[in-house]
Image 1 (cartoon, rainbow, N blue to C red):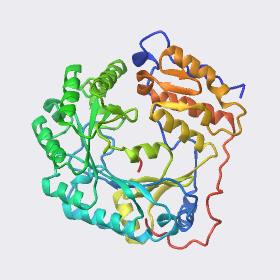
Image 2: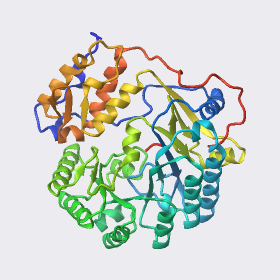
Image 3: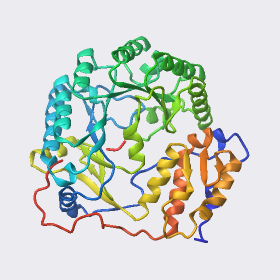
Length: 465
């Protein structure tokens, strides 16, 4: 451990922390530090995973809908154009996938605390297709009595009848990706609805008073000036949803927005402006009494729990269904085929069409602990599960002292509390801890929570955001 040079993780202490703490923002990559399972071993490994109950763990389910009406410029998740015929076939395959594995011990023995229908655009599915999937989820999966069931949606294709039918089918949380209310900025990114359309739509869900309504806002979009951003925040607050997400724009290579910026057609927002916009959002929501429950999420009411997102950061199991979905069982992570034809052919053939699988090392618990702690703004070093390190607090103390000097954390005994700047740069803090944790011990793959190998039989079919 003496060879670890922690100084390379130090923050810049010479400027305003939220603007200059680090040269760039690091993403939290869930697939880091995992060993891939050989492709020819994946079917048998999947069969073992779902055939054995495993140790009790928090359990979630994710259902991916890879269709959109159009490709918004900033989005990296677009895969397939929506058509009613293709969507109906796809929904039937999702139902088959859930039904086929629902009775397996590895699926039915653990209650599911949250279900998330994401995409893509789940609300692009027809009312019949959505309710068919939701009815199957409620009938066949072991949902906890207070299970959070979230449906992601856009204004387009999401009419009153569909909203009411989804609520009747069990949805108790609707997350709407508004991104911005400014009509000009919206349409420049491929959003068809105007500001007034968005306000009417959200007001209708709110006035039903039957589900938790969450509004996603994106800051850093081209043309989204500080004045536009403050107006976005004001409108969101006036609508009085149950929760709001504030996400900073990431210019992801391959997206239309990235290409437009590279070609000089649009200007990218600087890190300094992103930090200032985040700081504005934190101050605004704090001033009106909203409760910050993670780095990017605020709740106005107790109805908003944000359970799925918080549990994912804690390392909960996640059953994955649908093309492009990612999930995990125990120390194994897996991805369902991202190519739609591959996925549908696999389901039709009676198997789970997996593109890949990996297995975590023995340090996964420590990584999840750090990620979950920093996600909610504080890390208690006293509970850091690093049994092979004699004094974990001493290992990280010099780094935390420097971060406190730089203004990204404040220290209170064993607890490192993130400042507003630290919350903005939280990915960098997690990445630093992860790199140091990885350097403390060799990776040792643990398979103790998996049953002994069984003869392979046809894999019974059964993302992370």
